[in-house]
Image (cartoon, rainbow, N blue to C red):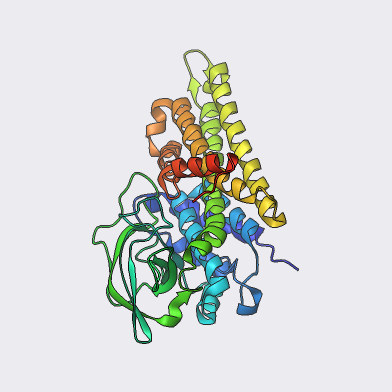
Length: 372
C-alpha cells in the first residue's frame, strides 16, 4: 500500500502558514522542516529499503505545490532537497540515503557559478586528485539552504579532461568551505538561506563522486533537470493558486461603502480574477501533463520538462501582477497577503535554467536542432 500523506501534508502546510511571515523576514523554515521530518515527508522520495516512503516525482510535486501556497521559501528549500535526494538515491552512499529517509539529513544543489551564470551545466570549479582524495576549488553563486543543509550535490570540471562535468557529495562542514558572511536579503524567497559559497582546496574522498568522472552533465540533464524543473513549476503553481484565492477574498470583502457595492461587483475586476484563474489552471494542466510524459516515457518528455518551468514562471509573474492590480493600494500591506507572493513569484524567471535559456532550448527542440 502506498503512503497516504494527505492529512500530514495539511498539518505541515498549517505550520508553514504560521511561520510564513517570519520566514519572509529571513528566518529559515526550521519548524516546518521539523514537522516534515516527524511525518516522514523529508524522506518522501527515499527508497523503502533505506527506510523512506518510496514515492516519486508526482508525490514530491504535490508536497511542494501545497507548501508554496503558504510559503514560497519553504517550498523552494524542499524543492532543492528533493531534487538532490533524487540523484543521491541513484548514486549516493547508503548511510546518507538512510539519514535522508529518517529526515535527519537535508541536502541541496550546488551548481551555479558566477563565471558561467545561468549556464549551470558548465562549472568552472576544479577537481584535482590527491592520492585517495580529491581537492575541490570553486565559487558557487547561490546555494539554497547554504547554512542549514547537511550536504551539497556539487559540480566541478572532471578530473580527466576539461569538457563536461563531475558531481560530488560534499558535506557542508567540510574544511575549506566558506559561506558568505551576509545573510540573504533579496527581493523574494528571503527565508531559503540562499548564499554564495566558496570552496578553497576542499578535501573529499574519491568515493564522494556521484557517478562516473565526466558524467555530471548527463546526470544534470537526465535526473536533476526533470526533478528541478517540475518542482519549480509546482512552486509557481502553488504561488499562483494562493494569489487567486487571496485576491478573490479581498475583492469579495472589500467594499465601496458610499456606493453599497463590493470590489468584486466591478466587471473589470472579475475579468482580471478570471484571467488569473485560467492562467493558474493552464499551468496546473501543463504540470500534470509533464508528469504524465515522464511517467510514460513519451517522446515529448524533455520538451514538456523545458516548457513547464518557462511557462509557469511567466504565468506566475503575470498572475501576481494582476493580484497587485486588483487589490490596489491595499496590496502593498502585508496583511492582504499578495505582496509576498508577488515577490516570491519573480524568482523562477531568473533561477537557472532561466526562462530565456529555456526558450532557447525549446526553440531548438521545436526546430529539430540539438540543444547543445
